[in-house]
Each structure stands twice: as structure tokens, then as C-alpha cells.
Length: 133
Image (tube, rainbow, N blue to C red; front, side, top):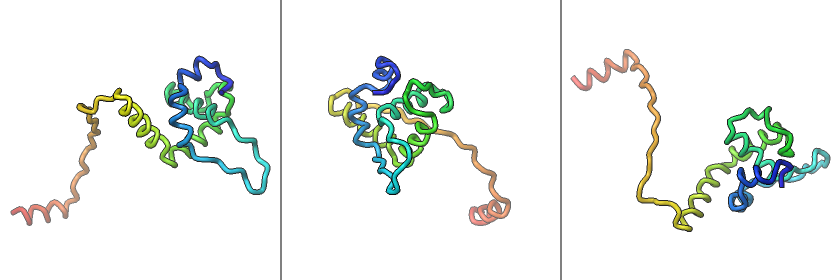
């Protein structure tokens, strides 16, 4: 359990969420040559990452009470992101809620982004006009 207060830790990462997330975390193997720092508590690092993501604070402002350095939290976030953790965790949470009957799959909201169309190159426009005309 992280050094941060148990109340905050439980609100950020409830036991139910940790039970879903823990098996999805990539394992970190010890360096073959030895040395380095001892492994961090995975739940403490996960809680610190969730704190930064939900609070909007910069990594460098991560309070030391989480028991992990901002550099370690950011490095693990990067590794987890590249490993597809967040997508797989999202799916696991939806599957769990669906199994409990707590998700209404009869309606959905689709979110889109609008992107300005790029200007057509001059020669391409003439080629299109020649085909259409």
C-alpha cells in the first residue's frame, strides 16, 4: 500500500480496480548484471500515476507521500502506455461492469473530432475537373 493516506489511495485505486489492473501490468525483470534500485511497490506507482492523470498536475509536482519519484511514475506510465495497459484495463472494467449488469449497452455516445480539410494541390484540382467535366 502506498505511503499516501489510505483514504486517498482507496479513492484513487479501490481494491476492485487494483484486482483488475494488477494482472495486466507488464512485469519488470531484474537486470542480469545486478545492481540498480530495488523494485517499487506496483500499487504505489499505479496510484501515483492515477493521481497525476486525474488531478491534472505535472509529474514533477507528484507529492513524495506516494512513495515513488515523479521520474519512476512517469517512466512506468510510458511503459504501460506503450504496452497497451490503458486500453486493456478499460476493456476489463467494461467487461466486469457488463457482467454485473451495471452497463446499459442499449445506448452510446459517439464523440468525433473535426479536422480542417487541407487545400487541394493545384494540379490535382485540374485533374479532378478534367475527369468530372
